[in-house]
Image 1 (cartoon, rainbow over the protein chains, first blue to last red):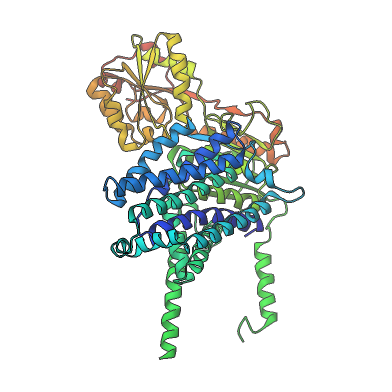
Image 2: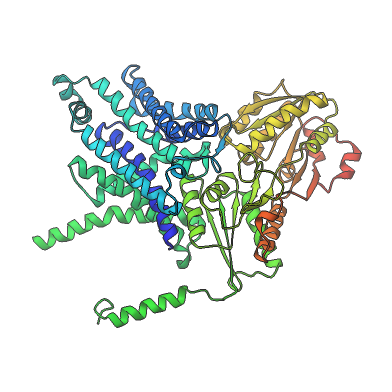
Length: 296
Length: 323
């Protein structure tokens, strides 16, 4: 496996770690099964690509994409909190609505960004290769997001969101406005996903309407792999675990892409990835099992 | 003695691994194909490329390292495949369909990229025009000359005024054709009515919504529509609306006629371009091409079921008559 392949996997893993952090907030902290991400990821890409192609500054476009993601999450939350639509169904409704909305935003199914400026090529210093710089910049972005999230979830509002997820009735008894907490959590979660979509479009040559397919699966897999590799109840460790999970998942795909030497073919890719993820989930448990026996 | 306790054995194993992974042949060329998804037409392109390479004397395992990967519909995976092929320093990367081609184009400005089965490479920003690009990119577009498609519609149904089209709004290739037809049809005294089918299961109901609004159906090479073509044929027979297709395979499945391309031939054409680059030509000096081989296929039996009779001249012109 070449260095270029590894850095490519790291770069895409870092982008998807933002998705994974978003999924962690909705699924784990809020306990809100949120499929909106399959729509808010391409939404972020669509907004960013369309604005950049129209001549807007890439930084403005990326921020706008993040806000668009937040609005999508807010609407899912509103469908659930105010209109009392079941959480899963509310998010499915939003996800399918976003397909049409994304087509409207882009005006066509594909908006290319090959010659346009992006946040990556604007910040890239002279003499540094793009495939090195992109993951480097993303490390800073992801770390900044992680630290901000850790900080936020230690504040009163952040704790209110976590309390709503763990026990909504108890949270209400303590005076937490749980409806507001759901809205804030969903907005934050999908804002991260929108940001990821915007960055993905800027590294991969454009936004495509099909880019959201399976985002939730990748996000959930990253969360679960991360939790399995680094189990912890502390939030600052859990966010690290989720980021690691997203990167490890991408390395598995890179590994699966390079598995032709054992007779595996292109069509086996998803199966190989699934097997590798299963191993990642089972090994830590087996290790705990064995060390438990040794101690007994 | 375990492998890990003996540095000598470990070194030996590493050396062996290196020898195995080293290129077998000094003159070996590497061609890597990335496709967004597995699909009969896209697979035919891949097979055509390989056929052209074999015909030019590049044989897999001897003087050719051949790699093929499909992203199985996932754009994140398509991006990683692009990175892998660039990291492998392939001599030529062939990208089938728009998202796969864009992922490669965004990631390399040096390695030759030959796109294939991209309907509008200019709108996809792969090349600035269909002329030689001067960059690392060239390829074969599967765009149809719509003049000839309209001519066929007129020959099949001379009295038709309204052309109905079922399409997937999420497929760049189909939207391009739709917009061009909307502009061109009025010049021929016809108009376009469309119905969207975002999933293949929607094709039948989209076609039914056009009953009474359309005199003839035209379909592009839309993936959703082609994969659910039988649903369209059923509506065509029930409502007596004839079907004109853009790919010849659909004629055997119940279209009245198609003046279309053979995707295998597009693959061969792409492969010949790859061979020119392997022989030393610069991709930037090769102009983009459209399909050279178009064939007329007709199906008189389907025509009868859909309420029309094909003219003798049309049947005589056909390269293949499906009975």
